Length: 503
Image 1: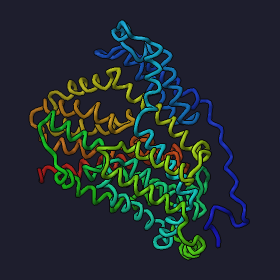
Image 2: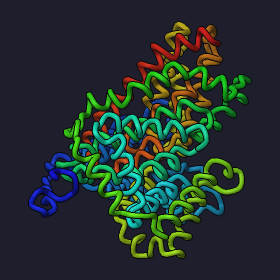
Image 3: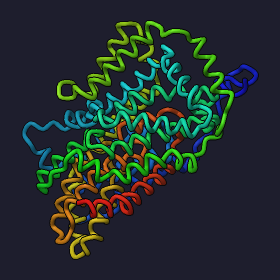
């Protein structure tokens, strides 16, 4: 049968694509952008060290977009540069004048702070779960079952992935655990069944489409349910403390329902149009999948253990977050897999995509948190309030929402974004007479999941799908812009009128 496995018709694995050499301009561009910003006069009301930090941050983002070097190298470079010159980039004169302040020690603590972030470890755990699915062939078994019943059309597979996320979302307050730890390890086994390989031209056969559908579905469901994203709960508390407006689970769900349903029902089709898979229909693959399931036979010992471990992790992520951090639950499962032989230590140390993503995302978390630390985000909020004074209430509300959405480019964590920007936006809106605050609050909080689509670091599972090898950098940024614009337009044109009517 042709094109059903990762091997070609001759039986040999496809040759790796030749590596294209990056243009020298891509090596220089991040540095050039950072230097130009450093030479720009410091905006009024902002401390020089905060502006200098922002300049380096923008240089890192430019580097991540054009990728002259691997993302982990770009992120690590940014962290090291700031830590080495922290007296001009990170710390205020008042901080450095403190009696017990040690510049070298504090700089290093900041530089490695991202490696202690729970989301970073949860992402790492998701990669290890995927390794378990792969080694035991349990992931292959699940993929074959999906292909057997839904694999004739690529589009139906896209809908299967979307509805799987939708079913888990109300009970899993971490989209990294839900999408990265549960769904990704399963669907990662699907593309090779169609001869679609990561980091290869064959990725576009079907793998790229499935990965994009999965991350997009995670973002939509994260906005659809109050309990589908941890920062949603934080946003709820901030709205209550700052505005005094209480949002229930039901009111959140009803507020987003029309847009959420529309996106759930149309998103796989939109992805099919904007990022079409090369394999559209394949009658042979489902039949082949049936025969392969027969060959796999009964569940093996390690498959049963993996299933028990994954279900335990899912149970802890849903019901035990008050007692055990989701990242710690993932690490517990990794330890159990190691002790029972489901994985061995070499499986951990040799997983290059996991370690690469771990380093890349950890450095980016430190850089994004640094923006708030140096006061750049607070200054941005004050400037926003000044610019919007005297503007019509509805226009001001729209401008604030658009700014809140677009400024997610500066954050590698939805939690950090919520903590840093939501209070400022709520305070600005409350100071403008005529703004419908209940509707404005609902618009802001229900945008948190959707905005994660715009960058490869925008939400917890993003680095997992970006690191899968099926979503090239240029494709991810392009699609993120397209779908981000669709989501933002949906908030304005569908969610806003509905919320005004209901609330």
